Length: 340
Image (cartoon, rainbow, N blue to C red; front, side, top):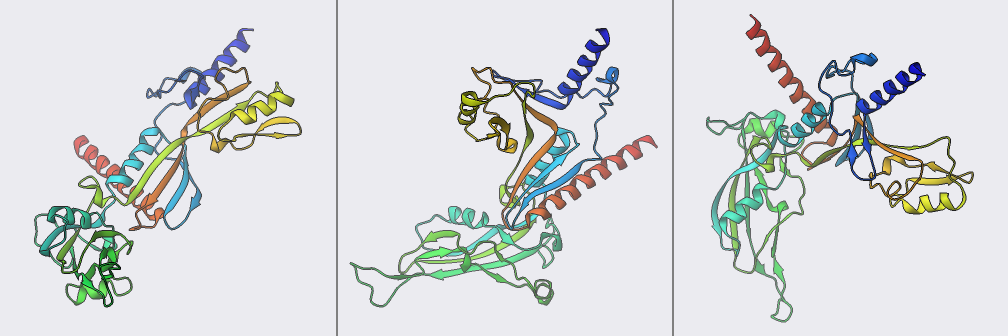
């Protein structure tokens, strides 16, 4: 009996270490265990692991990537998420010279709007401006010059205007020297989306701007962030007690009770058909006696990263890992100098 009790305790501690418990009232065992010796009694080394993680891509297209990252601590996963948002560099419009603006939009609002338009240019080819002068190696120049006119045949009852809507496609790149022309011969810098509405004009109104784009990161301003969203969730785990079979009306009630359609009926018994769709809403365990356990795995993260279009989504992940690795090398160099 003592041996069985000890084994059950070890299994319980191992489960507490690796999972978050979703109970009918509130989640429990949500805090991690940072002490390396916390589970020494059951033979588990709880040392923070940076290496040995596995990455599996679930879905990828031109704008979004969904991937699993398992076998790492939450601190590493969150560091990667924050780096993707704020420390992967991009190119964005930083300075605007306004030569004419007779639209109804104020100068500062107009400058802010064009600054938020994503620019398709490889930031890896550029240097940071810093305190030095602007050169072809650290600055891209664009021009926006447009005026609205009344089209032929336009009447007060049926107005017809030319250039009444100013889109991002009107922003044109102005090369600064032959080296910049050669640098972007295959892919000239442009706005990621040509259909972003900047403002509206009426006949006689003119906008004439000179735009200067620089390399930067999202921690300075959100316009330099390469992602629309970068988020993760812990892997859900839905466990049905194998010793209890739900059939008939009970099975039908459970299937209907789940708003995410996680459960299904096969051979007249309930099965967990789509555990990945579970949002842990707890409807299946709230005010019921169904033999179900809801858990989340502490070291298994499902990332969803949506790109603004400046990078391909998988490139954002690679660049973020590179930034994280450089931070680790910097820390090791500092510790090495301290120890000397």
